[in-house]
Image 1 (cartoon, helix red, strand yellow):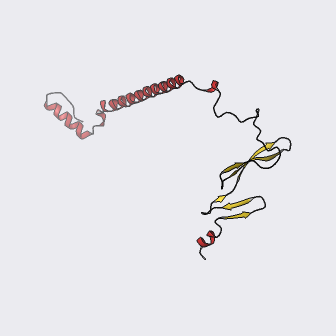
Image 2: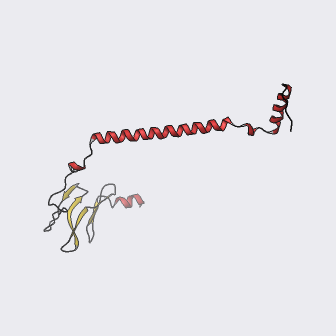
Image 3: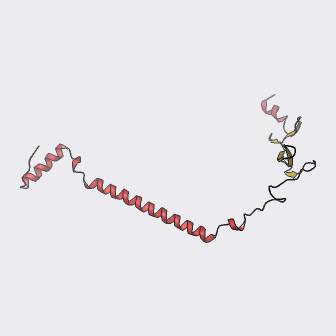
Length: 152
C-alpha cells in the first residue's frame, strides 16, 4: 500500500476525540469548528459564546445558559462606522496630500541641485590629476608659444 492510498483512507471522515470531533474533507484538510470564547468575571473562566462550523460555514450559539456576547460598556454590538467626531474632513485630507507633495518636490530639487553642483565642482578643478608626462608636454607646448616656463 502506497502512502497516497494510506492517507486517502482518512479523507471524508470524522474522528471523535475527547475534547471535540475533528473532520477531514475530500482533500484531507482539517475541518475543525472554531470556538469564540469570552471571559466570565463571575466564574473566572472562559465561556464559549459562538461557534463557527467551517464545514457548513454556519455561525451558531451553544446551548448553554447565559452564553450571549457581552460588549464592553454597552449591551449591543458597536457600530461598523466610527463616530462623526473622529471622521476626517475631505478638505483636510486634500490639504495634507498637497503639503506632502510640495515638501517632497522641494527635497528632490534641493538634492538634485546639490548633486549637480558637486559634480560641476569635481570637474572644474582637475589640474592636479595630470601625471608628469602630460605636464612636460604642456610645458613644452607653452615654451614653443613663447611663454617663459620651467621643466621639472
